[in-house]
Length: 346
Figure (spheres, rainbow, N blue to C red):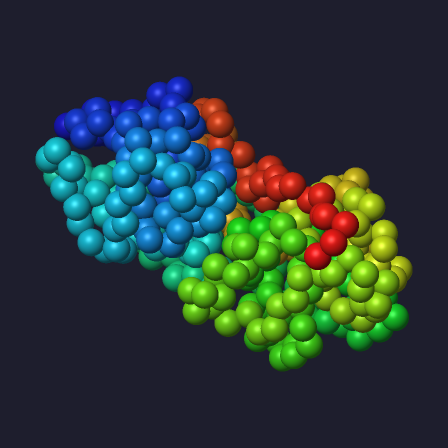
């Protein structure tokens, strides 16, 4: 069996013709397998969805209880046969509930990574390499320039800035699903005991993480009347909000953004970021390369990101490699958009 007979790229995403399912389809389909809850991978409107329980819950939080028709949760490392094709979900380490999906038939195994990272994260199960014949990997940060710092070291910078400027609020732009909760958890691990304040757009997903057992400490939603009183406090908000009128009401805020893209100084300057924090929920160049080798694959398909550089590297290792050029998948660190308008009352 050829790999493209098991999984094939289509305008709607990767499709398995033998079992009639798509992985992370970009449009509503009859049967969808979803790797994680970010909006470029988990879209509403599918007739049936197979995903981890956490991903299904996150879709319900984001899109409502009717985010899909039939919803079937699947446990990690639990094989499931669909019309003669075996699928197994494995940890991806990206956000809560994120998974790689292994697809097997006739002795051929293709693993679709979804989004993943290898760095430590107290809010989700770590990535687990899966041996396979073909590895379909993301490449969001697929250039050698991207070598992420330790997130814990970046949080130390934040706390040092807070100690240096106790009269200023510290406002961190961070993505509502996964990144925000990871930043909170690492702040707690660093020994910070004061309340962490959040924009209302982060509230539902943060509550879900806390209800799922993730230790985040005391979290308070910012009240409109209290913004001027939050000198010395740490406030998390969507990236769009740090340049919004909402942010101007804080006392002389230190603006920060937690993203792998903060490795590029020009991006930080363009966003008006005073304190860039290089914290990413995607694998960097070294981890992308190491992961490909760990899978033992003989073929690599590269998708959404810097495809060409990683394809070139893989070919130099003697692997068969090709870019997929799938359309419709963005970088959640750059494209995950939320409504930031706050009501006049809280």
